[in-house]
Image 1 (cartoon, rainbow, N blue to C red):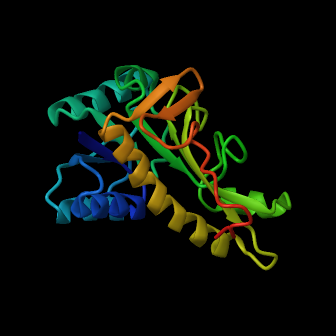
Image 2: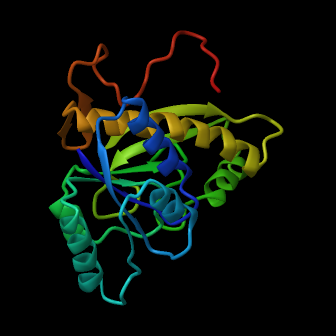
Length: 221
C-alpha cells in the first residue's frame, strides 16, 4: 500500500505509523507527508526519513484545494491516506477519489465528542465536563463530514476521578498509537469490508471486530 500521511502538528501518530512500517507489522510504503502548516514536527519526521513532503494550505476555494491535494497524491501514486492529526476537512472530491481508502483517528469514542471543533484538548475537557466514566479512541473511514465515517476500530480508556484533560489525553494517545497502525494494516492487507455503516474484518475470530470484546472484568487502561 502506497500510503500518504496528512498531519497538522507534531506528528506523534505519524511516528507510530512509521514505527509499525519499520517493524513489519504494517505492510505499506510511506510515499508522502502533506501538512497544511509549514514548520510542524510532522514535516521534520518525514524529511528525516526522506519521505517527500508538501505544504498545501486551503486556497480559499474548495475546488482548488481539492485539486492541489489530488495532484500531490497523484505525483506519488498514493493509493491510501492516513489522517494523523490533520485538522482540515478533506474536500469531497478527494473523499470520492479515495473512497474507503482514507482513514482517520479521533481521540474519543465516536460518535461522542466528534464533529467540527472537537479536536485535541477540547475533546478531553469535554469528556471530563460531561462526567463520562469512559473515553477512548476511534479509527474510522473518512466521508464528507467531520468524524462521521464508518468505524473500523475502537478502544476504551477509563476516566480516572483525578484526571485532567492532559492526563486523559496522554492515555488516549497511547491507545491511538496502537490501534491506528493496526487498522491501517488491516486496510493494507485487504481485510476490511464495508457494508453501509458497518465495517467487518475478513478472517477475524469475532463477528464484529470494530468493537473489541475484552475478557470479563478486564481493567480498562
